[in-house]
Length: 204
Image (cartoon, rainbow, N blue to C red; front, side, top):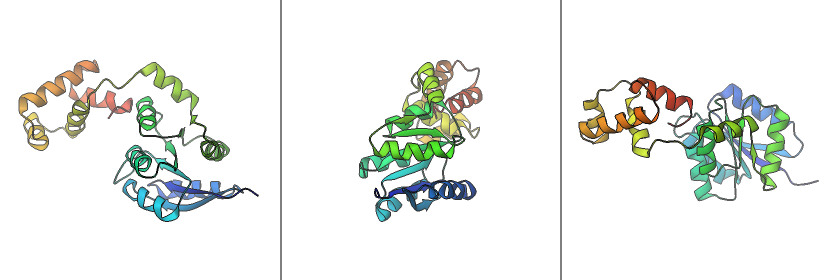
């Protein structure tokens, strides 16, 4: 019999995490050896349990799954990375691939598909949800610079330009310029709409 595939599961919703662990546990060659609820616990758990594959949710406290993937890819490049998300946003797919992910699946995919993806990435294949792949190609690259994304993210809570300038250690004029450029690039009417569009596309 082939050796067991050791899997780390990172998901902040305990019910979803336990359900995924139970489903994967039914597979004869997969062993969920570690479970974490925070993105900033991923690397430590992966080291401790010497895992082969990490299944990472995107939305987690501490660090996103994409940030955790990038850190794992840099520090433990032998571990295969599977990003799982509820949100089929094309920008997330591009960010995940740039972070070194080997697979990108939406959570409503059948359990058998997830188990198959674990085996495929271990064999050196890439697995990407085809609908998302098509959407990402159609959408194109994120038009926002890192700074524009940073300012838009900070503006999400409705902060004034003065508050944003103080938080980000920038001048009010610079903040205004970044917001104005971001709004133009996203063909939005205002900053709130720019934030919404960027979020929906997975660009923030």
